[in-house]
Image (cartoon, rainbow, N blue to C red; front, top):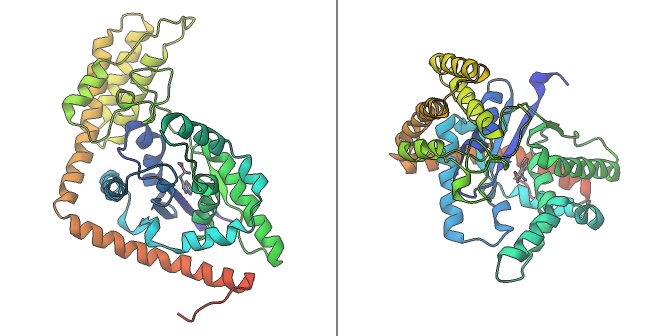
Length: 346
Ligand code: TRP
């Protein structure tokens, strides 16, 4: 397969705020891939129901994530909402019958999440949905016959399962119907929590551990100002993770800004100071905050403009979802044909 024929698919759960870690680690890559490939990007609300949740919040979070993704440069035509394409869940059922219980029991994310759910929620409730989640993920991918899936390393096992399901399906129907989707690992900056640079920046660790892309300027400056630079552990002459994280953020923001050259020059000068042992942390922090503020201001302005007319955006996303759905419908018709199910004439 030549690169230009690749179909890219990735999905993100609507679980609240988008932070610098999500953006630089994943979504920025989604935006860049659009220039070269046919891309499908889904906001997967069915996945967000697998853990205890609040229905009102789910719908709000779904639209909020749509605005955020559009504001950072995901194109409307490539974006869909999973529950507007019911073929995902229809294919999931069919795949359930091509996936062994044993395979699902071995998923490490299930083991982690089910213990986490036992610890954090009052009721001892582990849904069958959280167990079955990787099968829905396989359906998300294969319903578009995606050939490459840009995800982080934590999704490798799920991708492997998608290939196992596709393979078993192909064997059972006696035809190489599904292409086996590959994982696309792009080098992306791994952003750490500024409050505790021994951890990844993530929402699950709590509010102070992530910097939201759409926070007010003042909060971003404050969070960078209070960034932990020294964890007290010896780093054997190496740069401490907290300092490295600030340099990384500054460079990533500088690269992403059209007129980011001044930030990149400032970055290099600060690095020279670091090397000669006279870097002032306040200078690094101020410069990093400025670069981040410049970048996030751009996104905030885009979002402001979008939410002026929410109805128009919602209609566009409904339209793009139904356009994308046509691809899924074709797959489902073929799959039902191959598996002995009935099709209604459409
Ligand atoms: N499981 C992914 C996550 O937790 C989200 C996801 C759902 C996904 N369906 C997908 C990612 C399909 C890639 C392809 O991050």
